[in-house]
Image: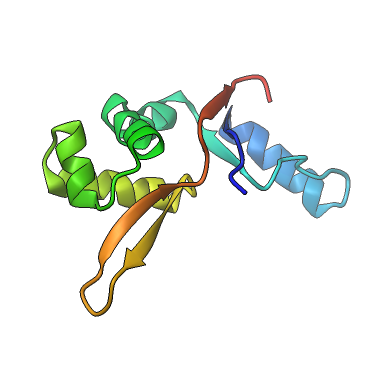
Length: 122
């Protein structure tokens, strides 16, 4: 079952450090949902969630490409750059790559969420 939206939480490094200390002392749990993505600072948010990367994510959700090559054609960008974006989105846990076929199967990007919710007040 696909979860509707992933929540992106922007936090300050000092806030995260304090929470870790409290958690290690048994005084606090993070309260974060397993599908939350915590980003440290707005500069990091801007780098990770660039406009072109979000276009790739949106195309995966809406157009359901059958390969990364097809996705690159959909967003009218170079395969190498789209492949790098897909790998990062995969590392963030927003998409997964399913191998279709045998020995040299193609990788099909599959969205794990159908949207993103930005939480600045968490």
